[in-house]
Each structure stands twice: as C-alpha cells, then as structure tokens.
Image (cartoon, rainbow, N blue to C red; front, side, top):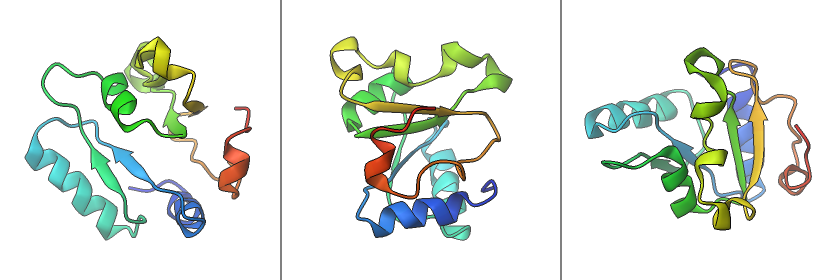
Length: 123
C-alpha cells in the first residue's frame, strides 16, 4: 500500500523520463507477481520489478541494475543497517550509485520533485 504521496512523487519523476524499477522483497515468482499486481492496482508508474535469485542479496540485484539513484527505507523494523541495500553493493559499483535512505514508513514526499536534484540530495 502506498504511503502518502509516493505514487504522485514517482509519477513526477517518471514524467521527467526517469526509469523506475521496483525491488521486491520476495523471491518466489508468484509473490513477485502479486507485488506487480499491487503496483498496478495503486497506479504506480510503469517500471521493472526486480527480485533476488537463489543466493543473491539485494546488493547483487542493485549492482546488476546499476541505478543512478537508489531510494530505500532504513529497514528499521527488520534490523536496520544490515538490511539496507546500498552497503551490500560491491564496493567498485557502490560509488557510482547515489543512495538515499528514508525512514521506514516515512514516505518520500520530502524528496525533490526534480530528478536532477535527487543526484545531489543529502538525506
């Protein structure tokens, strides 16, 4: 379920030609398909839905996708720092991905509307 204005914020980025991918917490293809259904139901902008394969970490998936900006929550309810994706990315790739960590359930409304401004945003 989307938090606050998340869908509207993502749509603004998408309208600026941002390519948006979503990272599922699931590995099972049936559960990933359910995630895709939820994204469609709530009107999230089109994008890829990435999931971990056998033996993969979130960092492996993000390293393969190589986004310019990675926005994720702080995973506070499941242990915090150890679960955050960005530190899991291989060091030689990590520096090429801008990381923005937001409080869990805090939403993304406070992030810039401008995709370009995301590249220099400090969380």
